[in-house]
Amino acid sequence: MRLLHFADLHIGVESYGRPDPETGLNTRLQDFLRAFDELAEQALARQVDAVIFAGDAYKSREPSQTHQREFARRVARIAAAGIPVYLLVGNHDVPAALHRAHALEIFPTLAVENVHVGDRLGTQVLQTRSGPLQVTGVPWPTPAQLLTREDYRGKSIVQVNEIVSDLIRQQLRAEASRIDPALPAVLTAHLAMDVRNVRTASESSMVVGQFPVFFPETVALREYDYVALGHHHPYQVLRERPPVVYAGSMQRVDFGEEKDPKGFVVVELDPALPQGERCVSHELVEVMARRFVTVKVTPSAQDPTDEVVERLRRAGIEDAIVRVVVELRADQQRALRSAALDAELARAHHARIQVVLVDAARTRVAVDGSVEALGPLDLLRLYFDEHRVPSEAREELERAAQGLLDEADLAGIEEG
Image (cartoon, rainbow, N blue to C red):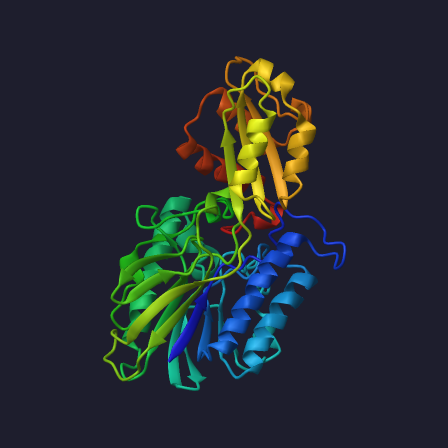
């Protein structure tokens, strides 16, 4: 039995993009859709028995009609080929208010054949070409959906999240006890793990507020043959028996994911093997993800232009999203020829230049504008430069700042 596991598609992320003149769609939206197209092609070519999506179809809890149409087109293509598709509700798919529809609810409403939605903790049996497959889904846990008002009374948000975590663990153990040991079983969950157990990336800036946190032991249950996780964007394997795997996001969202491979996981199960031991292999299959490239240069010549241009030529910036950090003395800054840099960076999909004055005590200003022209994140980066904030701390702080600046429709996920 062959399964395809993917997660964190995030259709609607348009950072570093621009309108495509032919379609009118944002070029970054097209990046995410091309990755989904590649996945659909592979699902058909590899003749997979089922597709498991571990949550976060969209960036927004209330996706646009265009985003919903493009997602549904690709899901329908897979389902029309006779491949069951299981869609789990992630934190970006849950509604803002308790009784509103979630972003994936249209599929069961229309009774789309071969499409199954996991919007509450429970098990469904998918009928595949290789026999039945049990899928237990654990959607993103929101306190408002799991607790009564009395449960909240007199408790902090930290205490509420601890109660939710305990409740999910209890419910999952109870659900696992009902799994038929004679049939293959997969657990899929959209959960945040304790940061000591996972690598994180841009998802940290895409969730506002506090939320329930779990440990690998919560989901590494012997009743399941494979655990398909979503939420954290880097691909990573947390356990091997059973395999506990974050598929990661399908496209890079920001420079925090610059070095991460992107794709989906193909899983091979042997139904003839004993319960908990049926997974014989799992591998990441990479897709064509837009590259993010950081170029840092500290030129020595008084006119630094040629050195910067040469470094850009060697960095492979064609069609990439590029950030260029140039450390200069004041006399070098005056000699820098911006037009030459702009001409070289025209080969990139998107580019940003930041000049850092290494011998100045004043606030640093980007080459192509004044402080007033800079955005909040650019000003924050100038502050980091001024105070020499270590690079390992900068990415985390920038992601946290981006979370505060993110669209209003990402706020209130933990409302109530």
